[in-house]
View 1 (cartoon, rainbow, N blue to C red):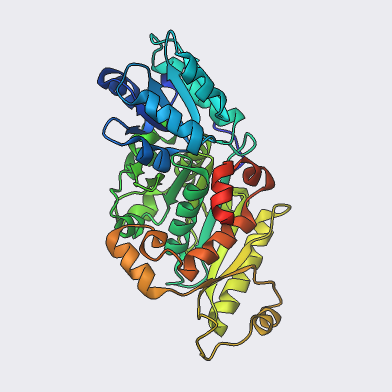
View 2 (view 1 turned 180 degrees about the vertical axis):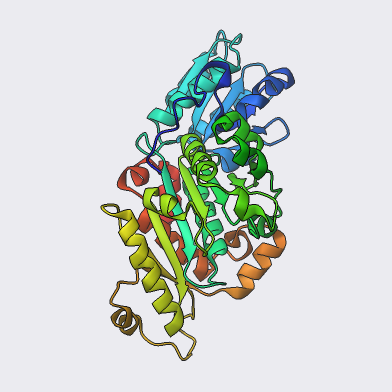
Amino acid sequence: MTQPVPANTPKGGADRIVPHLAALVSDTRLGALQPHCVELADLSQVSASEAAMKFGGGVILLEQGVPGWDELLLKLAVDRPSTAVIVLSDQIPGNMVRALMKLDASDVLPISSGPEDITEAVEKFRATTGGGVGGSSVCWAFRGAVGGAGVTTIAIESAFELARRFGPGRVCLVDLNVADGMTTSFLEAVPKLDLSALSAAPERLDPRLLAAWCCQHESGVSIVAAPRNPDGDALATEPAILRLLDVACGMFEFTIVDMPRHMMPWTKSVLSAVDEAIVISELTVPSLHAAADMARETDVLRSDRAPAKLVLNRMFQKKRLRAEFALDKAEGAIDRKIDSTITSDWDAARTAVNLGRPIAEVVQKSPLVSDIGKLVQMMLPEEAQAAMPVDRKRRRRG
């Protein structure tokens, strides 16, 4: 979403909130930082290798004197140079300075630095290094043309794919199916969004409050979802939803929106503003016609923005012989390009939701995950692709 966060949103000093920070610091400092982070990962009980593997490519805070800080810094310098590292030290040893010089981004702050100084340094990294996407956020909205098209699964897996590419703390998944959303059930997450409070006073939502309403998944994705409520649609007013997405886009580089199929008071405003609007359907004649109609309606709303992407889900694998007709015939029937297809992998998807984990962790070479990766790659702006950490690009090519 390209709109800026409204002017009354706190952005500096003690009110600054950063999406994610991994820290190897004293317990006292960890407690002081907690209110300033959506997600604060404590590395004190994690080995250097595990910390580098899981949090490398993000922003890591190290405090000189805390056991293991030097080992982790050396590990990052060798294995994960795309990591942005902040070291708290009044007199850093020479060999540690050389390690910092091998990193793409680093900073050294006095040991007396408070949370405001640390979060300011984190924000500078987010604005000027690979942690950002050219100084702007990216917002994608997924919407189903028919019921049961698999929108939630595709939205979730797209968020996971972005987290794998860009690191933890950069992706927010917003479930706007406020009456009967399934995102938190799929991920065994806690729905924290207080829709009544948001609807009553949208202008009060700021990064600090949104941080309290975020649930953190171990993948590094932040989840914003309200408890299932049959009266939820009445509470989801246009000012409330637009404020929610504005603040989310101000805090995260990537915001993924899982939208309901039925029209809401805010649907047109959201679809006209997001960077990409994705219509999900299946390869059946009724579904295709519904998808084509929805895509055309969305194009009218988006005016001079990128037209809606049409994605067909639950496609059969090519090696299986089933009664599907060719894509070119499908495109001819609806007079519209089909931008991407997602291969069905029912067993992997079912296992993943039962475990609350990404499909890639259940079946590493799932065709569904591969197709999601292609979809994400197609939609990523050039500046975002350029901002992806080098080591993650290398890993994907491999």
